[in-house]
Image (cartoon, rainbow, N blue to C red; front, side):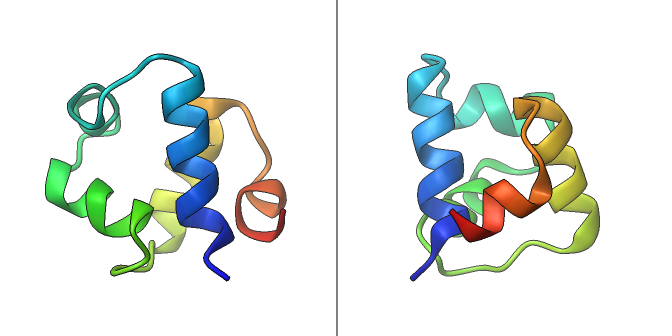
Length: 65
């Protein structure tokens, strides 16, 4: 199960943000974000930290629940 991808997608939609909004804020390309959300790509540690700070959620929560 790709908890990370579904979690960041849920958080993004809950906040009414587009993939472009989040990708811009996190200084990544939109296709990269899409890859994470769809489980095609796995984030590195830097990306995990960035998502954690952006959504104010622990990395543990992002990847496990």
